[in-house]
Length: 149
Image 1 (tube, rainbow, N blue to C red):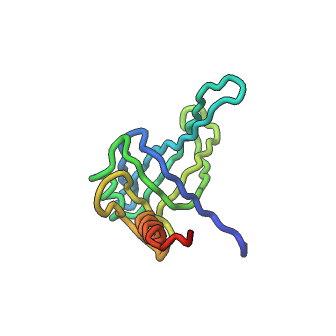
Image 2 (image 1 turned 90 degrees about the horizontal axis):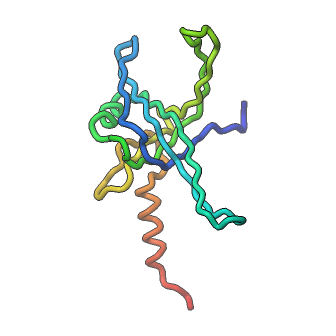
Image 3 (image 1 turned 60 degrees about the vertical axis):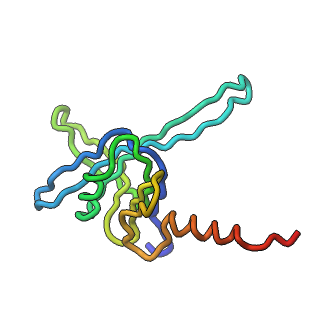
């Protein structure tokens, strides 16, 4: 289908340590539980409200799986770019069809970047798009321009 795009960009924190599994083909896969939150003040009560969304992240890139296994822990803040995918599976206990929606990190145009630490935290760049580090540097360079007033 021409003119379509399946792209997900998320910044959040891991709700648990990554789960690393071995697939039948011998390669490893990492599964992450990522929380994103938004907060606001209730107009009627003035009370602070917060809503958290949970996202399933699946990493198929073998080299990246090893880095995830070594460096990411519960509470780590990450930035991910991937594709959304919904898969159907059968619940063994009930025999009912179930569906899981996941963000897939695999191949071209996907990335995962650790945030919140010093130094170079970009742990993968599988395409030619800019990472958050590149964007931050560009923003810093823009601030160096003279202000005309």
